[in-house]
Length: 512
Image (tube, rainbow, N blue to C red; front, top):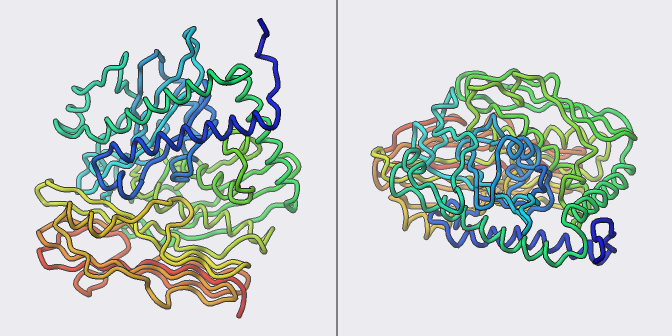
């Protein structure tokens, strides 16, 4: 019998291996979408799926949510190393300080074993739950401590020996709140089945195939980084505020490009704050990984090897490396966007022709719900993409750290006591330039019943910056019944009230 452990995959076999792993992730996502109950998952596609090796290193991912996948890639090794794994088990976690991002993003992880009982890999999915038990509907509150943001789940066995622990779900969320969790479990079961088929078809041992994949990705990355100019490039961007009176909070980065690799140092970033724009270091890692992934060809395998030459640091106790129990609900969705802008701003000094102007820079988070807790709605609203050397930025799209869809008007009005009175592009909001910025969006909600609402938005004090002489895009603007609201605000709306969210346009590229 031939020992396959030392065989080498040829180029075709390696390409097929990459494609099959990615197909497993895609199928997991399809199962999750179709089995889910909430519009947040089935309509907006606010979820991500990935495969990791036995040590928790990323092997493959679907083209889902960058902030989900990058943070999982950074933190999964710590999660899987802290658990005892058996066939039929699944672990659930959302604790931002133990590998999560913010509490609504719940991760379910399942181990894959071979026929001899050897641990080979993990499949995982992360999905955003609109009701995670926060102090306000939609579970995106204007909070100051982690416990105000909902149920905190340390790594806990959700499935043991193939049996779902419904009693644990009842303790966390109450009876009848299991649907989306069961969908996540189903997605992982599909992933395990398909991954088992991939492993069985390999001409080499799975661990050896993964090692060759990681080495190949690392070589591709090294070849790409070799074309970048050497030096240290710095940029500082500002968060508008934390919702509690602290304004113009800097996110500073120094990007060092050398023959030894890439270092992102966030020294000089603001200290953690009272409001919930703090985040764990894994979110900063997600933004850094995302930017450098964007510099690579489309067909590179996205795995740990691709990022092996990148390291990062942020001062402990800062906005990007917060200490428990700092609130983090908006860190994942808003601060991650500004980290991306800062890294792009630094790289614009090194490779200006390849870096676009700033995009909207906010996920424009809207959370609502009944005052009696009977319904919960959460959505992110698109904005304008930054212009670039090749032309105009796209209008009305999600950019950078999220690529979720909108909630279709029909679905929203069917599920919630809301009416969409206006939904369209915000004309004139994109910055001027040879490559003009894309237009933001106007979305206008009419409340049909009394409700609580929360807005967590950014780029309301200053618009997204232009590049290479282009003009900034217009800042966003929030109003209730025509009265200006802050960027981060919570309040009570009565039936007939109208909430309007106007999102930022992208910055322009190049002087006209």
